[in-house]
Amino acid sequence: MSYLLHPPLLDESGLAAAVSWYVQGLAERSGLDIKLNIPEDFGRLSRDMELVVFRIVQECLTNIHRHSGSPVGKIRISRSNGEVCLQVEDLGKGIPPEKRSAINSAGGGGVGIRGMRERIRQLGGNLEISSNGNKNGKKKGTTIVARLPVASISSTVVA
Picture 1 (cartoon, rainbow, N blue to C red):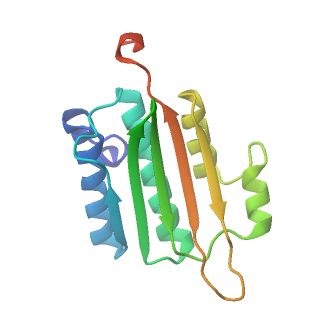
Picture 2: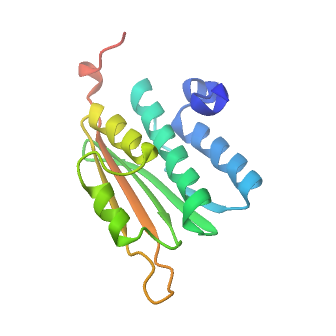
C-alpha cells in the first residue's frame, strides 16, 4: 500500500518513471487502455510537486476505473512557460450536471476531488474539471486539467 502512496521509484527516478510504472500496473489490473504522453526530456521537479502530480494521476485514473465506464484514459504531462500542466481525459459517461455543480462549488465534490484541489492549492496551482455528461445516450467524457507553477531552482527551499 505504501508503494502506491509514495513509490520509491518517484524519488529515485522521477515523475516520468513512477507514472509509467503506475500506469502499466493499473492497465494490467483493470484492463483500461491508458495512453501516457510525457516528454523524454521532462526532467525533475521538486519532491513535493512530483508527489502531487503522481497522486493526482492516481486519483484521476481511479475515478476513470470506478466511475466513468470508459475503457480508455489519456494522460498528458507537459512543462512550459513556468508551469507544469497535467491533463487527464476519459471517454466515459461524464459527470451529471447536478454533481458538476457540487464539484464546482467551493469545497464540493467527493473526498478525492477535494484532496486534489487542496494539494494543487498548496502549490499555488489550479484545477479545472470539464465534463459533458451523458447526453442522449452518447458518452462524452471528462477532462481534468491541473496547472502548477514551477518555482525557479534558486527559490526552492530544501527541508
